Amino acid sequence: MSAIFLDENEIDTSVSEKIKIKKTEVLSNRWALLNEITYNYQRRDGSWEVQNREAYDRGDGACILLYNRCTKKVILTRQFRLPTYLNNNPGGMMIEACAGLLDKDYPEACIIKETEEETGYRIPKAEKIFDSYMSPGSVTELIHFFIGEYSEDMKVSEGGGLKEEQEDIEVLEIDFEEAYAKIAKGEIKDGKTIMLLQHMKINDFINNTVETELVQEQES
Image (cartoon, rainbow, N blue to C red; front, side, top):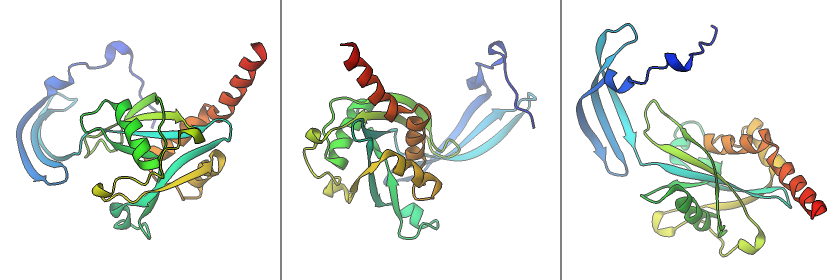
């Protein structure tokens, strides 16, 4: 099937007028909020129908890929993820980029704090690259994606997460190309981590940063 490309003037900007929320029922509000929502939805042919969906609201989040332009290494984490264990991931361990929920923080402030808690690196800044809904059919969460440079002198602790939050996180320092190869090998299956690694690869970021620095040194 051929893709359909819409002219800017053809894009419907009144989608909100085609959705009328009729009822919201809380199904669970323990660790996060699970709502059952009944609403009227106007189809493309103009007819209306009643739809019913569940939406899981755990707040928005942020993630970051730490990189070292000199060593061409990246920082990842490894930890147990129960849902993956329940869905054919033997052992339940996942290799991931550092991430966390915003908890009413600004995204950059959140990810800088999470970086120190999980990896032990106190970075001065993080570069925002894009946002993404990771599971828009059922989860409200919008994730803010960052990259950030680290160096050994930024290491202030062993990381590992917060014990009071029952976190038990292993910190991994891996060559970028080795980390990227783990995607094809099936060793990295976390969506946000794959997206961050691919962003770095597509933009040849590791090599470009080193080359840019050399050019700047030569011109100065």
